[in-house]
Image (tube, rainbow, N blue to C red; front, top):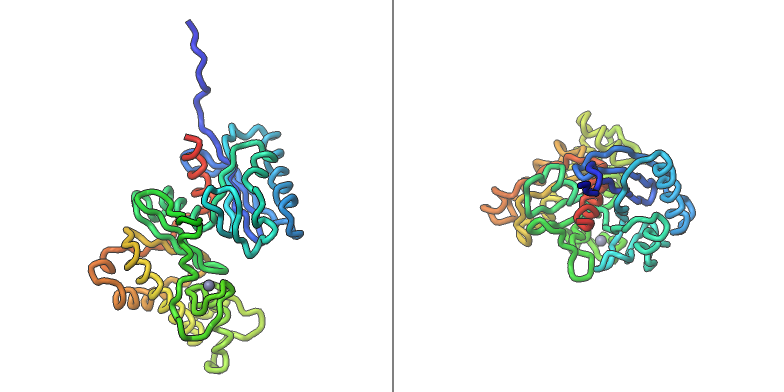
Length: 321
Ligand SMILES: [Zn+2]
């Protein structure tokens, strides 16, 4: 008697990190191992066809190479996704994707079931699956990059909110009366103080107050401010302390609202951890309930750039069953 059974072996997800500048694609198995990975420029012309064509090119290369079996694609976008995870609602860096049936387009062109997710949400799942928050059930992730993103996981599940925009921690108010305008329409958002963009802006604004600084207005980036800070530059140190102060205010608000087991901090600005953490912890301890502040762990992310790819793949495997 013979029995036909599914061949044993790993299954793979075609996971995509679709950024405004770069797109990265990884082939991940169900243990979270990344088998193949490529990084390319996001097509310059802002067109969904160009983006999908670029993905189809990679998929065809990998099919020809015999990689697989691939069971799904998982695409994370730098923006908000609607409640049934099929349409991009907001994407300041890829505006042509807005209001398209993007999930259907991906499924038709790539040939696999597709999962669509916000990048910060995917990163939260990635850190919980294979990163700093392994084993935790209630996690908030905060990404300090060009902007400030956030993802909320409650009882092991992503909390997307009633309209798909939960976790927008970067646009919670930490300075209501300072008058600084955010592109979201609010004033005093956390993103205006704790993002890489903010680090560079705050340094530029304070150049005149620190005549001894090694920084100059030309090509000022968060990385340069960080390097200067490591070398003891007073201006750079003041900027990171300011970022840490506002970040601490934001984290205390998160603790009072969610009381997570862990808050995971990721993104390029996290390199400056040693330069901002004292102010961050001080604000948290002054503002959150003492018992909460003492128990919530604040940790640096461990998956680096791969948190989103991991999280997107995990969400796809979960949906495939
Ligand atoms: Zn804002």
